[in-house]
Structure formats: structure tokens, C-alpha cells
Length: 219
Image (cartoon, rainbow, N blue to C red; front, side):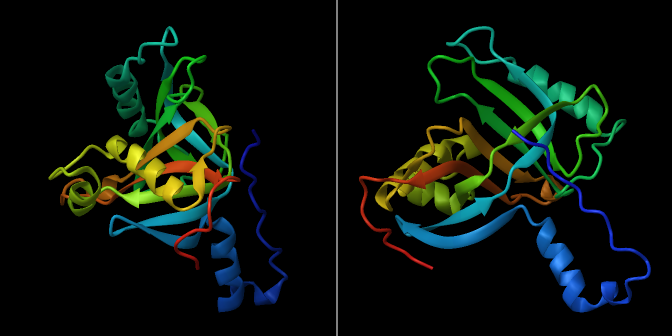
């Protein structure tokens, strides 16, 4: 796992640096995910995106054994107690934060939960934990009530409940969950918490299924 690199700005003597084209290139270089194509499953849009390696900074805790969960509420409390007095530096998406489920698909490792923000730098306060999410293909779906009804038959659902629907949609379109990346992401726009419902997405890592068939939807 490698840290996210920072790009040094151009020298002051380089006059074209403020042109729209160069500003656009700079903004594009900061993007950590790229939409590849959209998959339809049960009438719902699932987005296949390519994500770079991403450094998550926050608070993580693992279970004491390979069966139980960690103390999730205590991990969240620790994260919430730090983010205001000790802000995470150089957030990639300041209005968004996430819960990472780690090793939940592993029988031989303790599972863990991390509450975190994405960051461009590992130069952080020592009270924070750091975790690098490997890059690759990820499938995501919006966790709103319409999708809960269509996919889960429920009026509403917690975001983690969409992970199984993501696995099903992947399988129906010649993808499978990546067996080498044991992370699933619940991504929330916390800037919208005061005006519910807030925007949120569930993500799982995927790879092409060598034994599958061609995707039903292409770019």
C-alpha cells in the first residue's frame, strides 16, 4: 500500500499556469475516481468507477477475534471527538466522510470499522489512524429510499444493506467482488445532514468475472 502523492505547483515564472486549460488539467489530476459505465439492475443505476489508491485518515478498530465485531460506537465516538479540535489536513472531499468495513468477507481475520476522510497527505496528528484503500474498479449505488424499495423491498435501509445488492448486480453483469481487496465503503455527504435525506453511496471493489458473460450495459 502506497501513500497518495502530492504534486508541487508550477514555478511562478511559468506564465500559462492560470489558463482555463491548465486549471482544468490540475483539477482532473486531483480526481480520485472516474466513471467507466452505468449498469442497470432491477431498474436501478449502478455506477462502475475506477478509483485510485486513496489514503483514509480517521479512527479504526478491529475485533478481538475472528467472529465478533469491534466496538463500533466507541470508534465513532473517538472519531467525532477529534475531527473538530484536530482537523484532518488536506481533505480530498471536505463535505464527505465514510465508514469502511474491513475484512468482513474474511473468515481468517478480525473485522474492523474505520470512520474517516480521504486526504492528500499522511502528515496528520498522531491520534489519527491511516489506511490506504487500494485502487481499481469499484461498483457503487446510491443509498436512497427509491433504491431501497427496488432492491431490498423496504421503504428505507441502512447503507451497509446495499452491499449484497451490489454483489448481485456485479454478478449479473459479468463482475464479481474483488477477493483481494477486503474493504467495503459507506460514503456520506455529511454537509447535508441538516437537510435530510442526505446523499450517500455504497461501494464494493470488483473485477471482471473470467467465467461470466458480457456486461448488459456498456459505455
